[in-house]
Length: 508
Ligand code: UN1
Image (cartoon, rainbow, N blue to C red; front, side, top):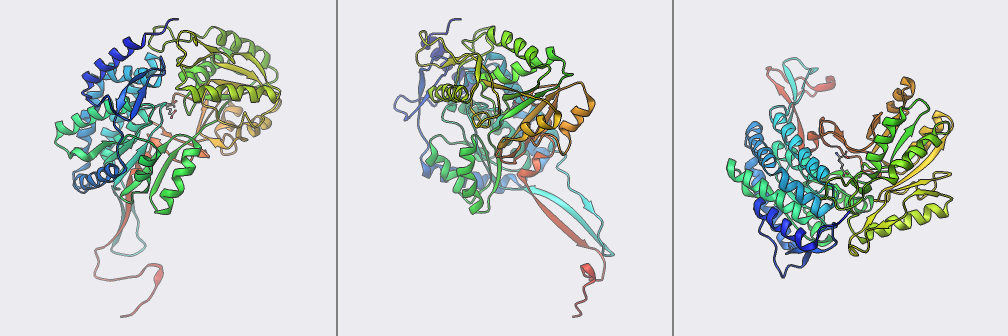
């Protein structure tokens, strides 16, 4: 499968950016934007200075003081406009995701669809930010809860979902009354600017304060300014556990709120009764899709010993024929790794797995290196492992799937939970007892537990996130909006007496 020439790719990028209204490329910029499709540079951007970050947060805070008094359903109109603009520019923004993150076209478009979906959810939510009324123990009193806007939300996002994860945060934050200041990955800055151009247009159309949405670009120093600013009421960070460990104590030290969505090491238990056709399709999409670069990517299969040989034969056949190549070409299912460091992670992990007794069934192979020496395409790799050794317990952000076996169900659950991460999980079984046990309190310890589908590809309607080293945050649907608001408890006395709670007497 042939790759596009870098000139063709650059020309498409320039056209897409123009249509999205982005005019930020500058020849003398200090930040290069690359495409993993060819490995070449697409252009340069100017980095935000740390002082500009502080100014951006100050402006966002001023916008907050205004936006928090706008009725929530009116705030929803801004997100409604954003959703309309995303529909209009879906092709272009999706193309930019494919060019800059290396996702196949369908996944690039799917990511924009995920943004549209969360906008729809947020618009509805703007009329449903409801609190409780609670029975008071005192006569003539009423208790209630209100949810008020929180403040500036800082968003740190990763390259692999360069716009959807921003939109999970931004769509909710904006209806909840909070401005957003966004530091995207340095690997996907153009996509972020495309998105920012659309949200600024939505802001202009509804006449909202411009500083409701800002993008800051740069390295860790830029991120640190955002993380440390006391006006950033909530910091929502998506990325590696290492990044989370650096960021979380700094935010906690100033009593800021945190929403963390960090590493995953997601597994599928395949039970004796599993529908293997379905399991194979689910496994291959979750493990090889997005070239293994989702936080929800399937990295471990725990298969019952009675079906493992059959499963492995079918998986090997599917892996051998996976079309790898330009994510922009029709028919490709596996695009590139994002950069050389990712490729090194891939080969080092496979070497460690082999040293730990693993047998590579398919993969351990770089492809298209002659055609594109600066791009890093690899064959998704299937490794049979004798035990769950340390390398299996480590998240490697690449398409490597470790297959292990189990004998009884408790052993499978134990292996399943015996990793430091706790994002997503799945079981393939037609046995109702196993299915229910897997999602019960003593089953999977992850934030997401699925039955008869893989661990990736969640819809926006559910709360998204996980436990342990995944960081505990929940984004997107369900009641995740509460993280973007502050709760006040109000006790209202409409009587002429002043009874004290707990029967306390204080006669004055
Ligand atoms: C991520 O990889 O950071 O569930 C997010 C999924 C997508 C989101 C992944 N909806 O795979």
